[in-house]
Amino acid sequence: MTQSTTDTLHALARTHLPADIAERWIGLLRPGLHLEKPAGSDAGPVIGQLGGLPKLPDNEKWPVWEGHGPLSFIASLDCGVLPSAALDITLPTDGTLAFFFFDGQLDDGCAMVAPDEPDSWAGARVLYIPGDARVAERAAPEGIRPYPEVPLTARVEMTAPYLWHPVVYQEFAPMPDNHPLWNGDFQEALWDHSEGTKHLVGGHANPVQDDVESEVAHGALGNPPWNDPRIKEEALHWVPLAQFDTDGDADMMWGDCGTLYWLIRPEDLAERRFDRAMFTWQCS
Image (cartoon, rainbow, N blue to C red; front, side):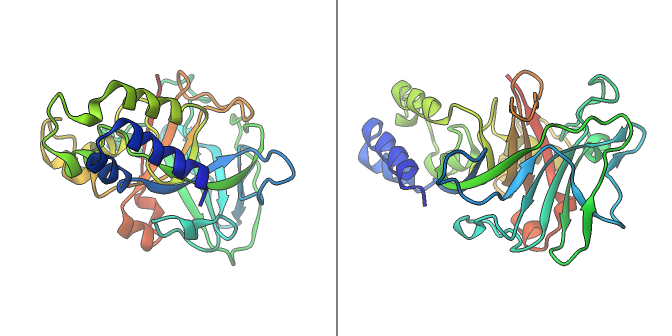
């Protein structure tokens, strides 16, 4: 575990919150894997890549959104090298996860992928390629410009829930306007801690706008009114699988410095039903 990250979040809570509230909030922290470009001689093993070209089995078709065209390859993760034992979600221990997204190259950004538009869900995909599959690098389809390849390493870090996340309300409700979690210094310290490029596996998502779990829950429920209490309940049944941030090295810009998010239900993750993962994205 990355002790410095754990210590920072613990100290942050204990500095700005009453002792009982601080310990309860600390109990909501979750381990995640921060993915980053290798730096220095002590960098860990390469566990995947942003951009470049995917390695796919011969019988695996390049993902396509029918009526719109092929998706762009975003990233891949080597599950056999990823230190997933440190997480509280059950990732495969072998094989590869490959992430694809319809990024607007073919239509100048006209078609949007969103959780509340079921017809658009084919515009974001996660492929699981078993470890014993014979694979080869696959050239991108015509019209798709591959992103520059950036190798990734992973380090374990603790992640904090977004303050308006349903799990926070579940733990602390009711939360009147004078609740300690709304303390301005605490919120500013959390904001400073979460700044910077964030490619993550597992843990709590780092949203640009609002909690991503409620966005996918809203879509999964068929887009009921936003005040429907089922949304917050359904949101508790989704966990972040991976997020990929805007990244200059990979020439990736999602809207205005946004982030791509894939989420999945734990039972689907355990069964390796990555076809049931849901996608959303946010930008500032």
